[in-house]
Image (cartoon, rainbow, N blue to C red):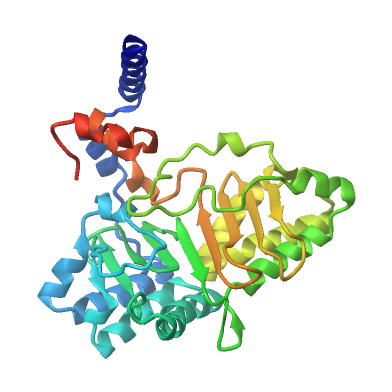
Length: 381
């Protein structure tokens, strides 16, 4: 019996090493690829507006705060974020509580420049109001405004730069790359779901129900799936476990847009836009055009109840966008959403080869090998 177990472990280890050998790229080669992708500083007016807002915020920070907030592009901090409350943990970057009123105001101007009016309203409600309400429920557990800001690159010297806003129920990953602007992956959640009379993610729920209710019975049979609700490609506890994720096994599941009529396709577009147009309109238009190219190759899946007050899950899978919505509580109490780019745009070009480069990293990153950590005499950072 012991020999059989040892044989199995040996075969598993060999398989892991073989798989690793096939996927590893030398770090120097990766650095070379990243260098090749560097671009000139954009003079496009809308990009200049973003850079100006960011430079104003950076200029307001002390040398210590700026140093604590700053990381090079491609640093692991770009991929380190979570939907969980920090609870005293160092999440990288600088915490909101360290900002003065002026610095906080300048940062919100950065957000306003990158986000649409609707997107800004959602983010503002989540970061300034939701945590205040939760703090009243359990002061020891919830800390007010537990959000962190990490800066990547410098718009004054780099054509590529970005920032991350990371904290409870919110993580936004922005990247400016030449004339392009990305906001993926992004996680927005809400608890309570209604703040000051505003349903923070109301359009995300209502537009989905509009699409579902427009389907005939045959279409609903394909759309409504069984299984557990929950984000399938959601956030991680620290490092994003879905970096460079393979979405191919989701293809063919659910109702394909090519099987929808024109009215239903318009409802599908409205649902997608509720997420894409959190980004400022000019940049969202570019993303939406990319999505529209393969609109017929979009899949819609629903799990759970089908009425307004039910706990529901749905996802939209298009080659250029991945969207998930999950009601974590009863009815509309607690909602999580995730938006990603299956076509490789998560974190942009700077996500190149972020898979494990050593056997220890493979074991550290793979949940099914957690039991084996003790067999290695070195660790990964």
